[in-house]
Length: 143
Image (cartoon, rainbow, N blue to C red; front, side, top):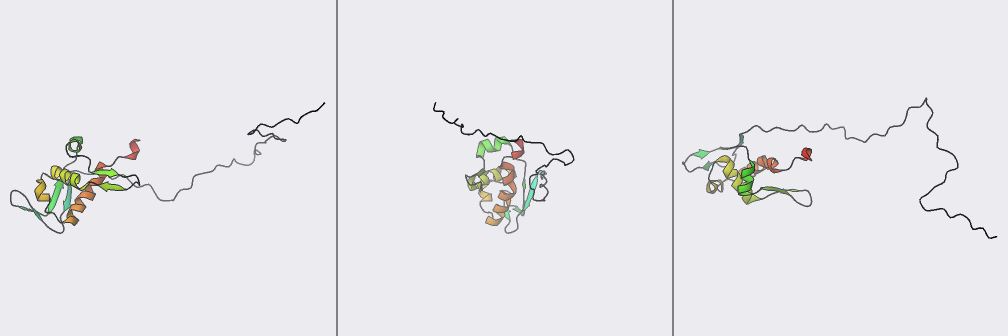
C-alpha cells in the first residue's frame, strides 16, 4: 500500500508544545503607543466680533472716513450660501484660500463695501483672511 503523506493546508500551523501563560509572579507586558510628550493644543474659542488692525494702509469707507481696524461679525451658514466657502483643503492636505470668495465674505462680515476692500494693502488683506480662515474649515472633533 502506498501511503501518501498528509498534506498540510496553507495557513495552518501545528505546535508540538502548548503555549503557556506567563507565571503569576510576573506582571503582564503592556505595550503603549509612543507619544511626543507635547500636550494637545487647547481649542481656541473665538470671541466675536473679531478686530484686525490694518498696519500698512488705512482704507476709506463710503462715509469718507479712514479705518485703521476692521471689525468682523461671526459668519453664518447663509454667508457661505451667498458667497461660497472661501477656504478648501486640496488633495495634498494644504489649506487654500479662494481670494474672490474671501474678499466677498470679508465685505459681508465687516459691513464695508467690496470696492473699498479692494484698496487694502495686500499684507493687511492677508492678515484678515488668515484670521478668518479657520472658521471655514471643518472641525475633526465632530467626526
